[in-house]
Image (tube, rainbow over all chains, first blue to last red; front, side):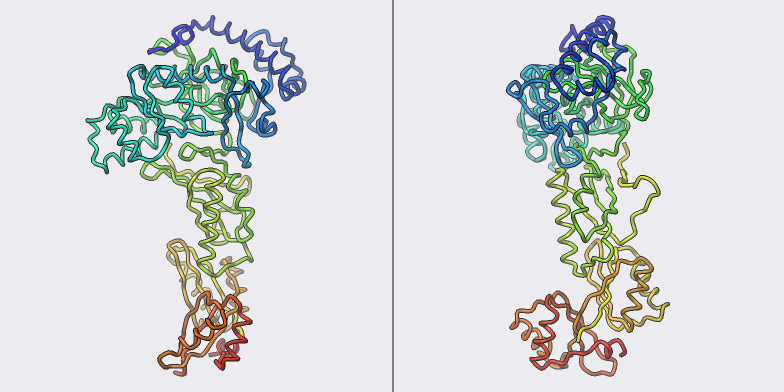
Length: 433
Length: 143
């Protein structure tokens, strides 16, 4: 099903004309309304009127997550605060979140994008959508919610967690679609088996999964276990939230990008050079219709490649492959963005601990686990078990409070974590993704 | 009247305890008394040795996570209620015991309890005043 025939199947030359028109308006807009962009354009020696073709996009400066932090909380807004009807935030590297605002039109755009996402997955009027993405500052819950309502599905805003209740509603309400992280889908299956639920008696037929990286092997496992179609979606709050990229049920190969709203590039993360389609590089987005917080050439740090072949579904848009890695050290653990520096900021406040630590990420029974190994500091030694345990518990709690991820802190002997000559090895990711 | 105890932080890995004791043995350090406290992740080995200064240095040079703690050795009468008598005196004076362990003098005399207190000086003073026999370091190290 195609939600918006006009835009989703627009001939490419027409689409490019529309992109150029919108890009020019965007440059005018941010140059005059966002001091950050005026400075950035001036430093790059480019004026809005220099944008004469889509290739001129390359003349524009990049926007980084750091820029959003530097302008915390509302410095990147291009509209007066009274026009902002929604504010979301995602976790940042230093404790301050990355803030994003939406005007009423932005909220509509977002709902439109998620409507396209759900339609592409074959979800529509008459479906019962169990939305198990977290509601709150995280964009997943409300993003899927508004999209689900727009297509006319009956949306259950159950939010994440509480597996037994999820299963009860899945059974009693006859939910036909579910949206959550793929790892949660597998974990929920295990609870279903434990609870003796017969999968054949459920009406579930499709799952819309995202917010964390997953593989095609995992898709096959989810599809076989739940007996559903499992579709991948892509999004990040800086760009708009979920709905930036979505798979179609016809091909399940690459996520369509709504190019009437975003211009996508892949670049070499080291040189910033734009790469030809098909080559692996860092994804960069320019939001050409967003009002509250429009971004020019935003560096996502996600590494992937673009597919330009026509798709069976008839959509004319470019597709992005699954994200294969990051150009920074961010981890996604149970859908939550985690930077090692956040953990480090907590460790350095404890005099009993050294700043030598290692984050060990694994996936056990389909759930991501995080273990933080920290060396005891030299010279400060507590020889009672209870104090050491208390120290580990305190750090676990502070990490949970700051990042929102439950972890296990393991205190280890001095000099047991490998030292590196150059950049310290802070992460051991054992997940097979 | 205080003793130097050596504490070693040990991760729960096979061979770690051997590594510590072997290193001390090779360097001529004799272990007089020990206790091991452990959790599922780690343990703390507490040692009374004949030469605490040397033992500390050797362990540290070999990159063990090691610390020194002041403990007190108290003679316990070899009769029912011997230990309770000491604990009663501590309790009356509101002194907390963080941990303790026992060993027996090789000469077949009384048992000796090693105590770690929250307030070591106050404990020494009160126990002495109550008439208990505290064993000095040089005597224990040289047993």
